[in-house]
Length: 158
Length: 158
Image 1: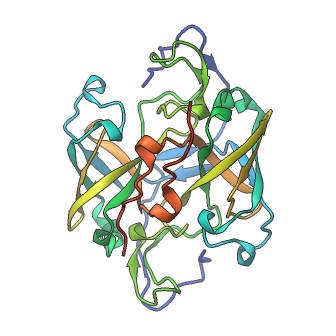
Image 2: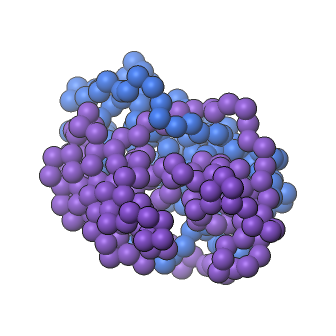
């Protein structure tokens, strides 16, 4: 994740709008074993780590029936990521790629989608496997994973 | 999608926080054949409709290399959805289910994830298949779909 000071040769920043168009509520926090960015796995598929999603108690009723799903989407907010880079040079690539062709947290709206395995639910706490984010990351949404609309094993990538 | 006036027996509303915790930029609009909610398919898997994603020109450089992916995630903002229902009674179910166990647009942060097939890119316009939202829906993000982290064909649901 880039700091405000952090721009590599070949990267491009844009001027963002003067005001936001909508607002986000943080609905909880994700607790993980990862205390620094260097500790974090590259993505959820490269993590077997178990974490705990702690939902704000006001939303407790919202998890009714969620235990019937084996996998869930977590949407979380990368609050430390800069938002103005529109082309980035990933270290593994070495040349510029568009922000919307990357899963980098650096993007105009720094929301990450991670699909994790749901292990158990106890009140407002969810135990999940495959977490990849920093301990304390703000949670934006939880959605059940539907293979019928979310799974495209044949999807092509470079 | 529920109107503010629209609450069914068995549904529960919560009191939302007094202020937002973060802000969203709308980065474009999604143009679809669907002019009313009744026109909209239930979800992207039940739609073969072709739509056009019109990106705000300031973000044009962000799609560089995206054409190498066959599928993309669109994140969009359901600006007409109420945000305070924490249990909802879907018509097909007839009893309350937690908001986080539903893909309903009615949720504290009304962001929808849709996976669509990318047909072509021309400047700041992307032609995609499987759109399911209202014409003019605000776009929040575009991400490449990675089968390695996004595809779980074995995921279990009720």
